[in-house]
Length: 565
Image (cartoon, rainbow, N blue to C red):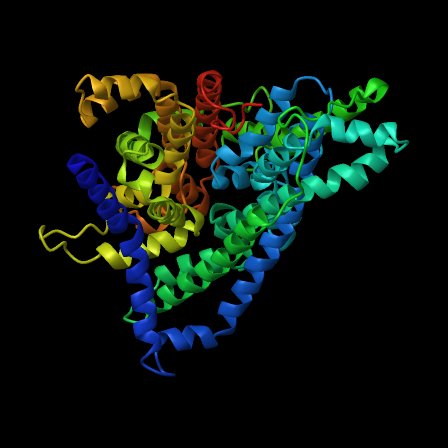
């Protein structure tokens, strides 16, 4: 029991240091500045019209993106879950891909698909006249892309609700004389609407913290949301900057937490008691209409995924922005420049790989013993369920709040030299790594925890009776049995961290760029062709990693890999 207590204490202290301490420091700076009165920097920023305008923009664009996500995610979830539509894995993979692609890449791809300088539209003879405005530089453009980016969240939530509706319940309604549409309206919808509400809340909160899309589409026309306003404030200097940024971060975090409270309220709300075979939902036969619905899904994926990525590829193959793509103008110069002559590409790629691999490895090593403590009764957390719940909530907090809030919190907490190490972490890769550990710990824990809960403890108990200690059981019994879940957790963290921008946009410094920051900086400096080239390579890497995860998902519980149907 002593080993269990030391392990529990160590995990609690570590979680408090990297997840709770930055949040407390952020709140402390904001509250201390507020207490100075009406002339404090915090009160000044709260009196500025730009603050409340950015808050309104954040709420409006997040709500608009939520509606788009509800439409796309709800449609895909209904057709994939409840009908005999073919190629289900293909539709799910296509819907999930935008969520895994970095948001700045999504925004850049759509920018290359629209407007007068689009290489793809010029090659097709469909480009608008030179001088025409870029339609995506607007609130509507931000809403559209936020919806596309987060539609997968709605899909997952709605699909979970639909899977819980037994087929015999709908069949009974139809046998009583109800038409298919009436059964769907009066029986299916009331049972599934909670999932739609949960997915909508998730999409809203995720859109609220998105930085890449509002930055690329909003900053050029001075349309600021709270994350981009914080980014602009961080670019300023002076003693008032940090209190102002802390106040804006607290405001952003409060809005996000309100959305999370709504989500948890919907999840805990009393649901209808269902009888039947849960997990075997109705499979409606579409008959002659099946090809029509499949064509609709194909058109949607062509418009929101294939066309933007083709435009991104076309933009990377022209010598300069605005040049029409022809066999004569086709050029690989951007790839040669990025891979051969731009040293910053390899440096940023190396930094991203190092940070992602380190975060994945460390979090997997931490998640295995933590999942064991949370599921086994002989662990301290297993007997004290409330403590385990609080610990999981603590780990979820840095992932749930907007990344820009976490970045500001880390700056405030670790800007000063550490007491035992006379070196500051600010401006180093160590601070980005700490932020990654805080943000993605829950991502690594979920697959391992799910697999641990389904694992029969008999073999572990036999090893314990034979005299095996806790470390031996974890290393020689549990780790091999949970290997697929561990690999999946590591790959999920690696893939998510590799494409991260929101946190690193505020934490990077010269020489410590990441791939997300590199794309953002190239686009900001007008080098969109180079940004497109590196974005194409990242998309290819993401697709390959997702396919690998899908292969590993065959050995995992349902839901461990989101895009596995």
